[in-house]
Amino acid sequence: DTLNDFADNIIPMTKAPHKVREHIRNLPEGHNASAEKIALAAQKGLDLLPRQTIVVEYETGSIIA
Image (cartoon, rainbow, N blue to C red; front, side):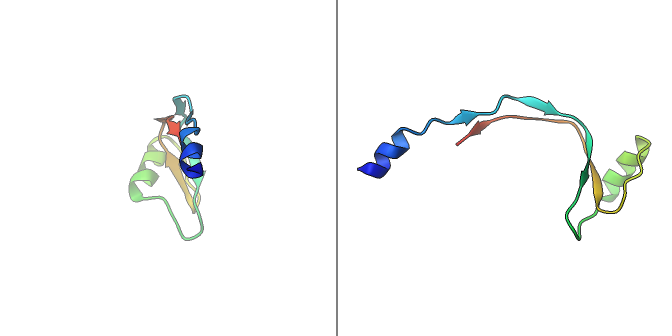
């Protein structure tokens, strides 16, 4: 059947694993950084503005269907 033929021809794409550097992220309206993230930023000499948080370095990359 046509739907199964289509599904058999899907080739998953991969996103190469890579590191995302530490950065400040702007949060959506109504969200604020946790006390933990505010303290982490302060330890690094950073002052977060309202609706900002710090994102620690992480690795990403996977199969995208």
